[in-house]
Image 1 (spheres, rainbow, N blue to C red):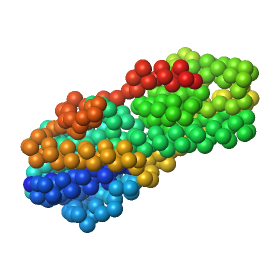
Image 2 (cartoon, protein in one colour):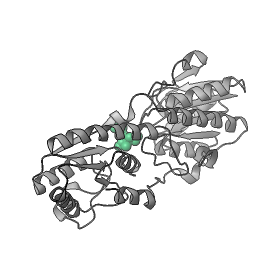
Image 3 (spheres, rainbow, N blue to C red):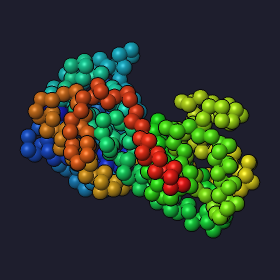
Image 4 (cartoon, protein in one colour):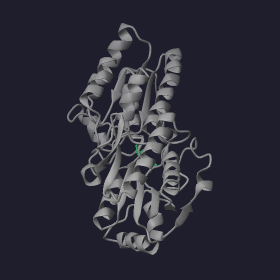
Length: 341
Ligand code: F6P
């Protein structure tokens, strides 16, 4: 078989482990040919191919990012790019495509599958918001990085008697915020799943500092939103969810705390630091398992599915059922973060 392979959307640690597994399993056990595409769907549209062999995957396990490159581009019917994808699949005589990506890439993959191309997808995103799988590639590493940052911020917060606001990634779901907040012992975690009340937050910090503490750590997911009507001025300044630019929510929360409490307050925006560098063993293993499972699925003639971690097992779930529905943090986990604050 000739199998196309791409990585789309934002990069993350662990992608190279998945690419390596696809190449090893594909070219080894099955004798397939693996055709990589550069820069995600953009490369499929442009026919930008990079045939992958054993020499390409040497020593890539500990390397972050993606050796294929990636882009935030998705083919659409309207501008002819979907037709271009189908033309490349035909020109390259591909029997199937393996697409590694987050929700946008998976959504596009689902539509390409509907157009008749055999597709198996692999979920990756540090945000961990892909429905149908317990974990996506990259999330574990991002939580590690954010937790380490919180540990570091803790000591300087304590030394300077400060409130430290740490903004982490997570546009539609607060998986990184909640998990790193619990692991890093944050006093407050603001996640998109639970709109927050700035008045309550300020009251809590004042009370805590009056009672016993000289510092506080507040973790804010970039997609956190204020509770409607909680403070009109605050809500208006933020605008509607979706219009918020990265960083603005952390800046706003930090400014409000400083202004209302008079506490010395500092903001740290972790940003792309969370997406870079060496993957944890968990992400390397997850990428490897998903890569092998995807090749097995393609080889068995399966299409329109995504590899998924469910408990201890890697399973296949229908792509159409998971694309376009961000997975939210469950109440149980949100509660743990609240209880331990
Ligand atoms: O990959 C998801 C994500 O990490 C979001 O949390 C974040 O908002 C976004 O990527 C940033 O994307 P970009 O790298 O395109 O700025």
